[in-house]
Each structure stands twice: as C-alpha cells, then as structure tokens.
Amino acid sequence: MVVVHPIKKNILALSTVIALMLTQQSAQAAIEIDEANFGPSYETMVVDTVVGKPLQLVNAVAGTAAYIVSLPFSAVGGNADQAQQKLFVEPWQAMSRCLGCTVAEDNYYKSQSNNDDVVRIVVDKPSEILISTNDQVIVMPQ
Image 1 (tube, rainbow, N blue to C red):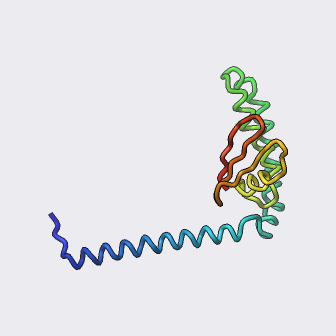
Image 2 (cartoon, one colour):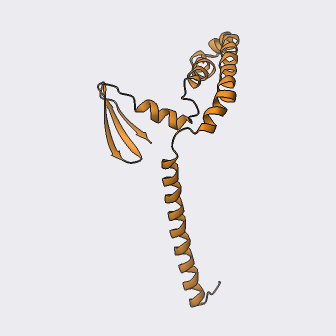
Image 3 (cartoon, rainbow, N blue to C red):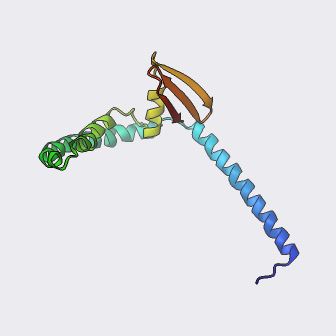
C-alpha cells in the first residue's frame, strides 16, 4: 500500500482541480472560435474549386461506372439498393455541396432554407427541433 503525505495529497488534488478548470476554459474558447469562423473561407473555396470539385466529378463518374458494372452481381447478392446509394447517389449528392463547405456546414446552410412544411423550434444554441407536417420529429445538432 502506498502512503501519501497529506501535503502531497492536497497539492495533487489542487493541481487536478486547476487542470480540469483550464481544460474547460480552453474547450469553451475553442467552441467560441469555431462559431466565429463558421463557414467556408477564401482558401477552402479556391482549393475546392481547383481540386475538390473536379475530383468529386471524377469520383461520381467512376462510381456510376462501377455501379453499372456491379449491378448484376449486387442484384444476385440482394444489395442493389445499397450499391446504388453508395456508388451512384452519394457521389452525385456530394457534387451539390456548397463551395468550400464541410459536410456539417453544408447541412447547416441547407437546413436554413425556408420550408413551409416544417416548423423550426430552436431549443438551445447547439440544437434545434424540426417538426414536419407529417408529425415526424427530427433533432438536428448544429
């Protein structure tokens, strides 16, 4: 059994509390910085224009070709719908992402579009509740 001197024990407890407080403050600062810098920057838009979108186009065309080639095999295997989703639908949907945006930023911007069939209730800063007219409740973190 290890015996710890009472003074060392108090110093250890105090340093642990200070470390936890500093961690919380730095995490809060990181969250505030992310909110201030939300959205695409000039650099990400340029890189996405020059590199990202052309590669996404190549990926979408290659995925379409792979889907057509794999269709007989995926039909026999019973996963033609999954193959269509992963090889055809998702690559083409990636092409419609806003220029320079991450997936989260794109989802946020698309969720802000007006939809008369949806009631938006902001619960607190990081999330909101969307209620559509067909009574489906969707919770979307921001």
